[in-house]
Amino acid sequence: MNLDDLAWQRQFDGGIEPAMAEYLARQGQLELLIETARDRGEWFCAEVAVGELCEAGEFERALTVLEPFVAVGWPFAVRESASILVRQGRIEEGLALVRPDAAGLESAFDCRWFAGALVEAGRVDEAIEVLTPHLGEPWILESLVDLTRGQDRDARVLELLAPCAERALGGTADCRCSAAGDRRECRHQPSDALLKYSWVLERMGRADEAIRLLGTVLPVVPRIAWRYADLLADQGRSEQLRELATGEHTELALNRYADALEEQGRVREAEAVLHEALATDGERTRRRLMAFLARQGRLDEVVDVGRPTYEDAEGNLLHEAIDLLIRAGSPERALELVDGLGAAYVEAHADVLGYTRLRLLAKAGRYAEGIAGARALSEREPGQWDTTLAWLLDLDGRPDEALDLLRSSTEREAHLAVAEILTRHGHYAEAVAVIPTVPAQREAWDRR
Image 1 (tube, one colour):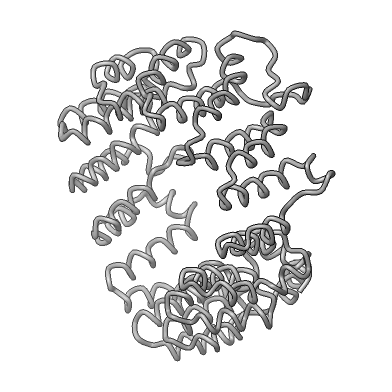
Image 2: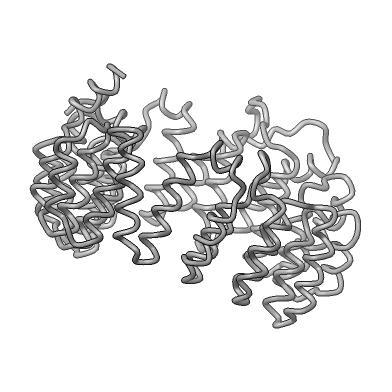
């Protein structure tokens, strides 16, 4: 185990992928996760195992899983260990793990993680002081808002947000939102500062004040119209929301107005609003209208609304329509849609549509037809369709054939498909063993 391997895992979901680690946890394979983390340096296995152990109150064992990762200085393991120690009541011990030194106090990243540990320890005021010198960074200001939620410090947070908000309101040309005397540049966009200010006001029960604030600056900072629309909708200001959505801020507010109408049971009005917007805000509203119609169970209309885009190079909503039909339990209707596409478009997108059609056949339970189609594609492009064919064979109740095909395949990710099939059939340790170690995966990555 070393930092380079761990960083590569996290960047590329290498080793045992997060989804597989989570699946193993759901199948009760905690011991396998712990063993794999220890023996192979698999961070995602360790992370999931630690979560399971903490949920069960086994904090000491969770710390043991993290120990080898902490030993090499993996920061995510260090932070998690600190959090566990704090939860155990070993507060000073936990804080010591993430407390920045003099140089670290100059790092916004180090201070952010220390502040998080302080909040967990109930020392919210100290956390605020640690973050204050770095409030010129937008993501630190966002962290301040997030970390103090529910901590009874909203008045103090508003004070710290005020310089940025005043700058956004035009009250000052220069904002020094860090500690007094700190000359670091404020990097906040006016709209971002106002949004954070309005969030804090709302959670303090001062939504009316937030509405007045955003309404005042809306002509100068039009990007906040979506947030203004959310506030109006949440506070039941239907008439103001309608005026906003049908005026000059239609692009950012109209869809929220339609959602609000639907939430109120005013379905016909919501549909009329979306149809009206379709003329001026094509792709985005078309997508919204399709989802709206799907929620109403009007699947033929979903297809018809998206039809003008299905063979376009840009703004193509074909796959959105297919996904909506699948979620509505209508894969056969999605197959009809794919089979009705023009020959030229199908030829130009043969691989994507070929896979899409096989997926739909599987969703429809037509496995034999899907297998035949995958074999035909494989004959044309040997080695390119093995994992898809194996997936269909497994769904058809033929896992041994699927595994034999994959074990002889030259397809690059065939080992992952082997592991997936093995896990589906309860062969968990064998599935983990099939996946190459992180160093082996990195070596193959570098060769490619």
